[in-house]
Amino acid sequence: MTRIHIAQGRIIDPETGMDSIGDIYVADNRIFSILGQLEDFDAEITIDARNQIICPGFIDLSARLREPGATQKATIASEVKAAAASGVTTLCIPPDTSPCIDNPAVVELIDDKAKAANYMQIYPIGALTYKLQGQELSSMFALKNAGCIAVSNAQMPIANLLILRRAMEYAASFELLLIYRPQDYHLSQQGCAHEGAVATRYGLPAIPEIAETTALLQCLELVAHTGCKVHFGQISCARSVDFIRLAKHSGLPVSADVAIHQLHLTENDVLPFDGVYHVNPPFRRAGDRQALRMAVSEGVLDAICSDHQPHNIDAKLGAFPETEPGVSSLETLLPLTLSLVNENELSLMQAIAALTTKPAKILGLEAPSLKVGRLADLCIFDPEIIWQINTQSWLSSGRNTPFWQQNLQGKVTHTIQNGQIIFG
Figure (cartoon, rainbow, N blue to C red):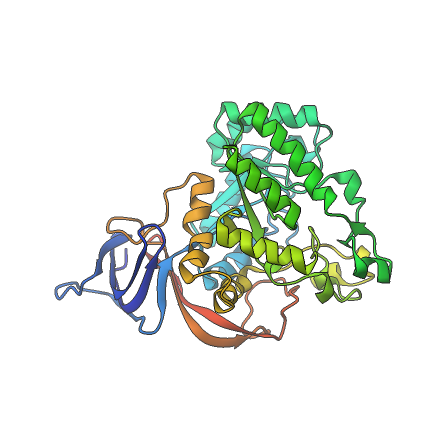
């Protein structure tokens, strides 16, 4: 249990509203003192945080680590290094591993792998249905007891609305959060691009926005009927924002997030011969991107996630529709969020809240805070450092990012998890 002195940083804590220059002292894995200087504190490590920002560690609501299963793409050991270097101290893993997270044995395996990698805060999301086949409900109560923080069917379709209704009733009875990625399987017709000008020009199979909004509206009706607490993951279009806003005004127990890359790229950025731009949901119109940004600022979209999906090179080769969707995005989470601050789309406090206190509230976790006595999960970053994404700076096994070899601003210098320095 290392005693750490973090000196003269700008302390930002959305939970308390604090924005002050000062020192933080960590002892026995917790915050021992804040702001004032302690003359008699015997620090084993001192971090000079001048001109840097100290905030709670980030909570990522959706990060695929590819293990168990697709270890040719990445492993828990490789991806938690990327998470630590990105200021992320808590990771939520969707259930579409192989085998999927539909029984306690898989949860135990993930926990063992996380401990071996010295990363102590990985929360598995349990499968909503057996083998994610959308037919038979999983044993949600057993998954909750094993440590699953929520249940979801990931991106796999559910056979019909009756099964979804029964799943929501089951989840509600055990006060389990249901994470739902709204996309109608038939309307999406295995597309790979937004139904718009770019898809038409290049003859790409398209996913219309109604694939998302139709599924969203159906689920909202079931929320009203069952009372199940539902979080909508990776929202991509303006119409969905409108429906979520109305649902919240109606008092429905819903929340939503957006993937960070959806706040920056549109269909016009897509290079139709480069698989790194193949994501699901697809990059949509510029108007949708602006609506998503405004929704984060207004709190309609509660949180920003990485939606991290590392791939090996082969998965992104070939014709655009044949490539696998997803972006490796843990390491761009902070700088791309900070760019929204620099563009005056969000305040710095709002940006940090969307990565810390708001995801914690969604998951029902104690809000990360820099209060005395709280567990020391901290991120220290320099908002002015400009760095290039390249083989020297990148830690994730997946290099499938549209921002490769671009310069980004803002970099984590230290990450502290449970009072221990895991990066820096």
